[in-house]
Length: 370
Image (cartoon, rainbow, N blue to C red; front, top):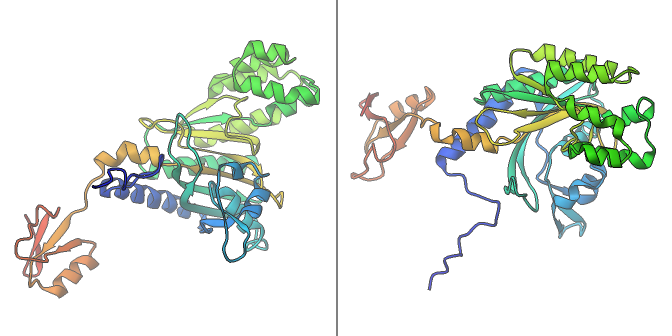
């Protein structure tokens, strides 16, 4: 009896069939090419590292969602990466520790997590990103936002929008302008994330309630935020946001949600989320941060284009291919491949060119349309 479950894949994992794989490959190449064009060098960290190393560079938080197992060679615990950013930080601090700064690096690879969630059950993702190491200035942040937009444009993303945030907003205001006891800070952050005015009041953060309404289209939201900042604690940050917005004006729809912290646990003064029209959910996030272990400043972003692949795969064009009949001119076929043609060789007399997805047939030394 055949077991109908024998070939099932684990929940959250899937095969990429040719059309989908072609779209994913094109998108990855296009994004990496855009980063290369802006001076970012690619690095390729390993899929597996010692868990202790990864935990040390992420404050131990990411390891909770990592597949872990014992290395039979060293008998030490290994982890399958769930994020590549920490690995790039390790490379910058070790193998490229003496390289001139700012250091521009990019990467692409698969990451895996132990469990998905209700909104995104996928447990394996393609992560593509760039890190500008040694700088977290407004200029660095502007370059990174511009590069993230360029990468999505190169991959075919349309109707791009970018939502800015200030991850350290509560900490900055709590120091002086809207004072909070240390015990209140976490509660106020939580209620701001939940957009709960009543919860804010109960947590002693009534002064922070107006922040819930300083959101929306960038210019309007930035003006509202500036009006709330009587003491000027946020003046330099607001000016920085405006400079970044000016740099990418016209290339994306810009919004501001200054108190948003979901997904920005490691960012310092600046963060952003990027979206594209027709694609479900966020395609990536970025911002300024400090590299775990070395504490070096950096600015970067990570894109997860799986949903973009799903959105465009049906329209991914098949490459034209030349059918090579039995006994074909092998030199002519090689010349066609050198010109960029794709060739499919017959293995038997009954092979059908059209059924094999070919658009042309080699006749003599020339490719003729079917």
